[in-house]
Length: 117
Image (cartoon, rainbow, N blue to C red; front, side):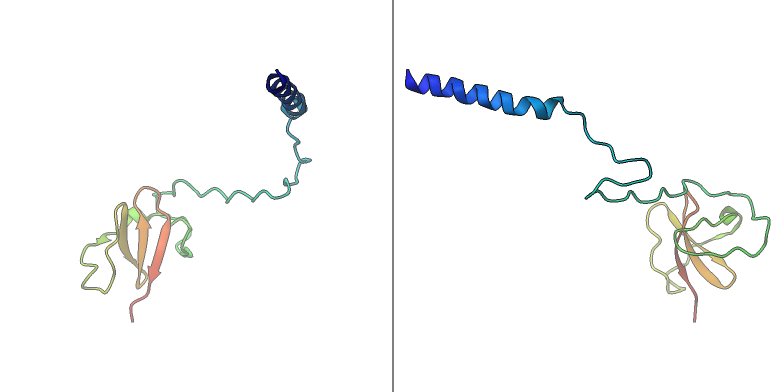
């Protein structure tokens, strides 16, 4: 009888201690502030670049940025002869302004820039 009574008491204490935790709504940090211990989410990447040529002819190309008008360029198919690695699935090399640019086909985002020597 004693083990059954102690099990009932333990179950009751456990249920009473868990009830306030389940009923309390999660705390939200004030607007503009981040919860302690949480990491900031990475900035969303631009999903698709403009396929039309840029209005200004001088476009600065950097990895992670869009290359507007990249579809107007002919892809480099003999990349191994030019000292470039295989582009990988969904990417292609394009030659522009004397440099080779690795571009994602679906988005137009620049992944790598190689200048020949």
